[in-house]
Amino acid sequence: MPDATFETGLTKAAVERRRVVIVGGGLAGLAAASALASRGLAVTVLESRPRLGGRASSIIDRESGETIDNCQHVAMGCCTSFRHFCEAVGCADLFETQRELFFVGPPGNAKVVRFASSSWPAPLHLASSFLRMPWFSRAEKLKIAIGLRALARDHSRADCSFQDWLNRQRQPEAVQRRFWHLVLVSALSESLDRISFRHARKVFVDGFLANRNGWQVSIPTVPLDDVYEFRIATTLRESGVQIRLKAGVKRLQIVEGCVTGVELRDGSQVAGDDFVLAVPHYLVQALLPEQLAGVAEVAAVDRLETAPIASVHLWYDQPLTELPHATFVDRLSQWMFNRTVLSDARSATTRDGVHADGEVGCRLQVVISAARDLSTMSEQEVIAKVNQELRQIWPERHEARLLSGRMITEHRAVFSPLPGVDEHRPIQQSPIPNLQFAGDWTRTGWPATMESAVRSGYLAAENVLDRVGQPENMVPADLPAARLYRLLFS
Image (cartoon, rainbow, N blue to C red; front, side, top):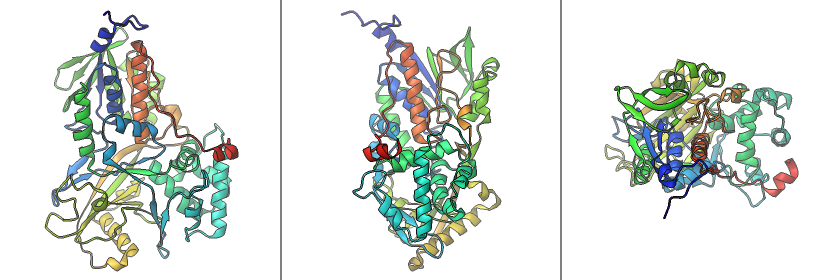
């Protein structure tokens, strides 16, 4: 039976022989690899590090012997592309969806408030939880409600800093700090004066207002290396993807306006027909020829700024709390993840509540986003401060002894969502027809998140498929806005 012929004139056999080279084994590159391999293309992933995952990585802590993550990577319910990718590569079971969150009030009022949906439709589904937060006065709660309504109704295309917008809405400083900043610093890893209105609105509308499941957080129950190195890598290899680790790329080779191959740092070359450049934005220019790096939309990538995220790991000889996680108001510590409670016992022998020295204990991971201020503090000073805050929150566990602590800082964890930042983000189709860009830094409509990374990989894959005559929309639909939300704010 003859091969089917596509619009480009390529036969099915020719499509299957078409070689796609993906530079970068982070989430964007892996999403593109999964999408293209499942459509029958021959895919090679080149990763310079000895592991996959990019900025989502794990290390072995020498003192405890445990595998710990450089940062806590979580996804919200509104991240439909990320969820689709996890299901496609068979790692969805390694994430646990939290249908309730726990907020801890500021010093002096450290009450724990359970945050969960009520039976009311969106955007009223979280109102009862919000009203139970005793650290806001009635007047402040009214101000927040008015601010949320104004945010949902504001469809302006103009961009400004979110702090400027809040000031125009007459949001009090305490409300800005304890509500708006609390949510956005965790989602966008920046301060209010460095967050664009557009990206702030995206977080609140998609995550908390439009759909009753958008806010739910999915947390990995195993170290990130288990997610990427074992589960995702295994699935991709089984689907025919060739994964080459420790294969750093020196430069792209371009002949007569097309990429013909890549030169590796060891001098070897890898040829291909289509290419996806899925590296962090600050590495893009070094891999491109001078004539392409000077193109305006490509050169603009260098204007993206970055923000650091710190992760503090603490080991105690006995449980400090049974909460799986918590968000802290008005503290240096922002998010706490109880790795002993959350972790899958299959992933490591020390992850079942028994510390490496045989004592029954727990490990807590505390995340500090927009962590520039930590540069003036030593690692031990940060650990001591975080430990002090945790003990003030749970004083009844005063007998719990801190066994050890470690801080890991990802200095360029995300790009900063500054006002006007989208003007510097390129589309996935580069000026060269057979070269695609992929990464959370490309233009996806989302800030620097795992959702943005996956979407970019899918969009890059769409462009490749379109070139071979197999056009397909690969990005899943967003969560639908609730009827009441549409009636109120559309």
